[in-house]
Length: 431
Image (tube, rainbow, N blue to C red; front, side, top):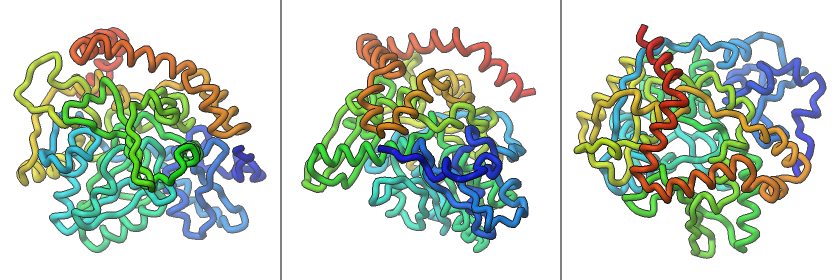
């Protein structure tokens, strides 16, 4: 049972919020920046981290308000992105990466230069937090997608410390976290490189914790490793399906399609995201970071290309000259394949590059169920409801049509549904 949250119990909570509660991204920049220690991130009723202000400690200095990326969206100017299909051609790394291992290629370059890389990693308690890596071996902690919102609060000061040492930094995270970092730093730094990851929305850490506790109870063993984007083979296509792998303390491993997993099914159905994700001001063009990394759905299917897609490929958007400089160094270092492509081919399949996910009608009702009965009640009532039924129908269609038929059908539907809006956005970028 999920009890009424500490946030909801706080008197005058709405007056103390930095921005409207329903618009908060949970980036944690305000808590990291507060010099008096008046702000801390606590779990709200929906299972997400949100800022709580201690009025007894607050000195009303306004630092948090100036730091909040939602209240200050005058982020760095980015131009028209240059789009690439990208692949890091190191099989041992590619097999453990969600798409084409673009993150690893950029991270390796920063490590080679004596810098530090920041990314999301699983913690022993199965939560996801941002951490720092300063050697090649530690980069493995950040590989693979984690379909839950990470806690980046603690790394913002670490980023600043490394930059003050004159060393290069690569910070990767969701666009709201990149914006939060810029808000915390107050300015750009010449040795700071940022990469935002194309994001559907943030999954609930509270829900995930309850789900994993349930899996451990059912299996009778502790979870020691989880991979939300496991690749069963180099021919696996994430457009057709996604695979979950869980390793347990008794030595056993469970591998199954995401549609058979209640948490992943709800996540991919877009019904259980943070409220603010559905109106995210950073899920747009132009992007907020130097680089943008995401899946490249449909590449090489409708039009044959010489580019080898086996093992997975990434879409990389180079959003500014600073990002282009890093891209050039990575390509020059070798072990990569990169090809310039039309920006349209990236955005037509990957909507979250230019718009946030649509909020389903059942979203608030689902979380009310969570408030009253926890994740067990949610999965019993909603595993297969609305978004789930639509997702199952899509899965059936994809398997019947196959890869080429699916990609062609999606292209036609998306061009009819979104083509006009995308053309307007791209025209505005180029004006």
